[in-house]
Amino acid sequence: MDIGSLVSKVNRYKQVLQNTIQYREAWHEEIKPMIVSVLGEIIEETKLERAEIIVRDNIENLESVILDLGRTSSGISENMEDTGVKRTMIKSNGSLIYQQLFNGKIMIMIVSPSIEGYGQPKPPKSVEILRPDELKPPYIIRHMEHFLRDITDWEDFDDDEPQKTSGAFNPIGFNVGNNNNA
Image (cartoon, rainbow, N blue to C red; front, side, top):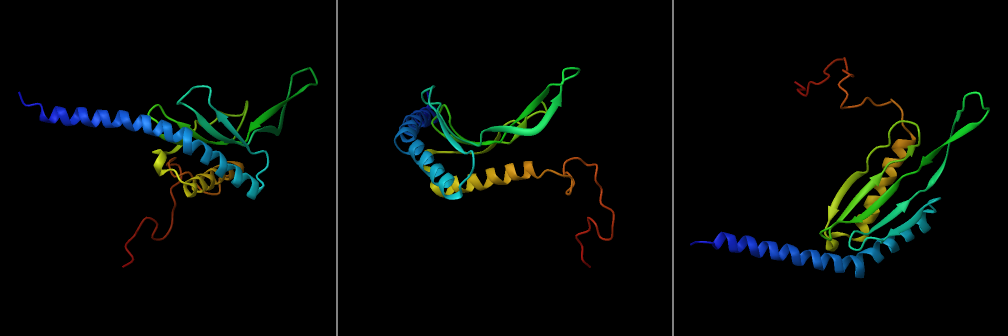
């Protein structure tokens, strides 16, 4: 009976299980404190208002570190019929999440701003999944840039640029779509 390829698969499986143990140890010893520290420095140096770092550690080995911009009044209110009462719509300002996965890797996600009662909030956007040894302070700065670009685009929403996926906009003009310059 030739089980040579099976032995290599079992060895690979054992290595993955060992990686999970090492990744979880790295999260607690190095990664979580580093994320909190770097995000804290970013908040302090940029004076990012309403930013708060939240550590969610109620489920061991599924922890997260969140840079949350909190909730504020959206400035929009609904007049309740025949009551003279206005219901203020609350805006969630967005968050950047570092979520420890079941296998010890780290998923980075962005939650866009949303206004309660005004459309559907976007689901969190996955930026990337990294092994603990791959996550360094320059990556966190890059994630913050991505997050700030996302929330700024949300706040500055308009129709200046057509949606690329809608198919409703077909430009008309000389050489549109023609890459041949001859």
